[in-house]
Length: 90
Image (cartoon, one colour):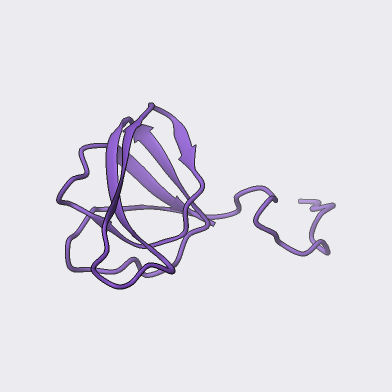
């Protein structure tokens, strides 16, 4: 397979090259800090942002289906999250 972009540096504005499904948890940090979240089934997403003090939750409300949420987070909380089919992408 030819990859014409192999020698280009990855960037926050470049295409997504990896994704992992997320199970929201009030106690477990994500294993990888993503550069964004893909929300397959819309709703509210409650997170701890990467640079916020630990334990500080922020809720993004009414995220539509099939949305890319450009946030860097350490945790996606179960409490306050009713969106589903969430992928951490980087």
